[in-house]
Length: 533
Image (cartoon, rainbow, N blue to C red; front, side, top):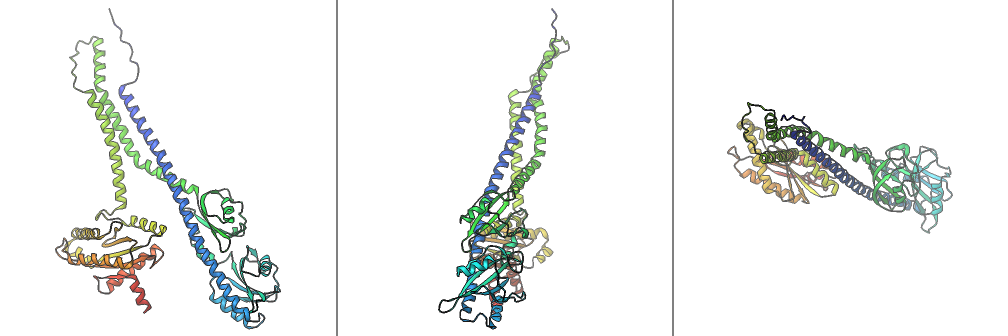
């Protein structure tokens, strides 16, 4: 009887295993990417909308204080003219004096009870004797009490907001009002305060509306006086509400907005960030993840092919042996079983697990390297900037100590840079041993170090600085001798309300310590006291 060998059917075991491994890896990466994208996007979404809410609230408080100060200033001016004849020639000089001492208004005007302008400052428009017919003037005369107008075009064709205060004589008789004008499309007090944040890389900006939904401040000057009352956020502001939400603005763009009212003026402030900025950041994060993991995935694919062939090798040998046996190969030798099935399978699983663990470990190492100084192990300058920025946003008071080794160049020149590095690590160890549980020790660069102390007063920071200075002075370093250090201290927000200025002032204190003979600690407040003396 002759047996015919049937053609081989089906897929090779090595191909099936490789396919399953690759598919599993791709599905895992896809799921991880989707979850990472959604998590990152949600986190950025929540953080951005929360920060915009905080920003709007802080700006509303600032603007509230500004409006109250403006009204107080006008009230003082009105009281001064209560017993003065408004037609007196001294009125103009006195109004010029008030204009020169007031930082709030672009111009001041006195209107008598008959609605006639009797004096202006600056007096360069020849308006004295004219009778303005604007709604702002009419309402000020009718109400006979403090008033803030809507945006309107004045006689001079300027777009302005007028703040007025009534003038009464000692007997309570109404004499008219004094009005302060803010030129909305020119340099004014609001643009000085709010304009510095009008342009950001994220596209974030804020704007101010009045009680009727008219824009009185916006980064785009051409939009000032535009009515945006159809905006859902503006509608809430017109009801005196505060909060944060996603919104489609009057131009059909999606924003993450925070909003808060200014009760003293009936205005509202909106701080908002384009929603597509969050999407772009999330997509960039995913792209970086894909770029980082691509080489490892490729390596894993190559490894899976190799392992699958090794795993299928015993069955391939058996199949070949059976084929040759059924074909009547006379030269066929006895089959030697020299490979264990379970062992190879376990090796594949272990290798895949090791590959992923290595990927995660390398990612953690890259993260650590990005946030710490390689030589000393201290926090690096980049992370220090992120910490101080976060504390400023949270309103956390903190002190900063900037330290610089005295004559460190001599150490490198006499003992070499390698021993100089050992001295730097020695100093870093002393800093770490003296810091509190919430403090951060940072290497600022070269032989310069920084310590951040949250909730620490300047006096407390000086104490810590002195402990470090004395320990370094009294210790024998790796070069067999002691070194000294000069230190400067400054405190947020007492010394400065901006982080850049804070470090600048601490640096000034450090350089004063150098000028005073080195090996000492100088606080910025002492520099200020010296300056006043």
